[in-house]
Image (cartoon, rainbow over all chains, first blue to last red):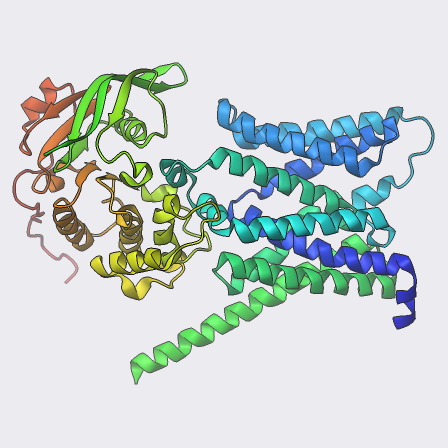
Length: 280
Length: 253
């Protein structure tokens, strides 16, 4: 299998797997603990509008999707705070509106639309050099931001109102973080696709959360779990020739099942020894 | 006795609804005020105005003395149902977050901060919990942790929003003893739905129902409550309440 490493698309996809694990490990932990999974799903699907517009205007779809995703993320954050509309309703509207715009623009784009399936279902083997550079840049930004502002992020995520009583710029921090969430989603679309990207932001974190109740450790564990999951998926997809995105998600869900079973057996045996001690 | 906060004819509310109507109110540094009133009467809105979470539409709020340490003037214990119990954070970190204002731009905590946290946990008798994730705490333990976060910065005013919900009677008694002790160092405002229990500990009562009536005693009668336009039920008064159950026959035995 080693000889396939000499092809640049293989190195690109391995690098993409690495950076996807870092970005999704960090951002996913934030999303899961803040209970923003549905919001993130909304941003993901809304970004399809940006991809459609990118095709129509002849831009790189990743750039237009990034702009679209950030604007819709900021929009939800703003609308749900300043108006009376329920946040989940705003997300629902945005979710379908973005998809609708994407479909309209792809439909009116003359001629053949290349690589559309790449964006919907992901294709880690077609990740370009530019994509890898962008993911590297995002990884560096996220690592720096979450290292330097770790406590601030943790405290505000835990109890926003309390942070406000200490005159912390909660709104500004939320806007920055939601933009980073949007960027992470868009840059990972190539890896597993719009339809599946939410799983990279939730499954590794849910597995990690089974074994750790510490924010930092959940981030680190999720990164490792994602990496193992993505590589396992890649090998699967190479060996039995199935789409890589689906293979990655499939392996992650299997891991989750195994982890949950292990955790249940472990906690039961701990309970049993404790009861034994009481009885003695 | 010096003044900490003064509200001057404050009007406040949310979306077209005036909830606080012309409220004037002064808080002094040795106060122990119980806030009572019907649901929707504006108790939480009043707290939010004092905490700076909402701005008055009309009127003013002013803080006095010690303007250097602006941010640690107020310690706040929110209602427990506003806290996500599954959030992955340890007791120690929750209490550290009470010192968030003092920790500089990158919010690294100094050794003194950690000592303060340790002392506060000791004061409340929950040192053994410090490394536990909050998901493993009981209701009473959680309230103590939130109280520790509120007082770790040695605030001049402590605000508690219904600290006696979801806790057992033993904890409640313990909590009030702690508060009486803390009252020697700071003013305390406590919102409670159960005026009977708190009335032995508090010094004064503020009835909030759109307007505010300040009752400068800890004894209040149903007639006075009615005249303050504050229709809530008095459960008991005076001594710590107890319930007497009627003797009943065990039919099954």
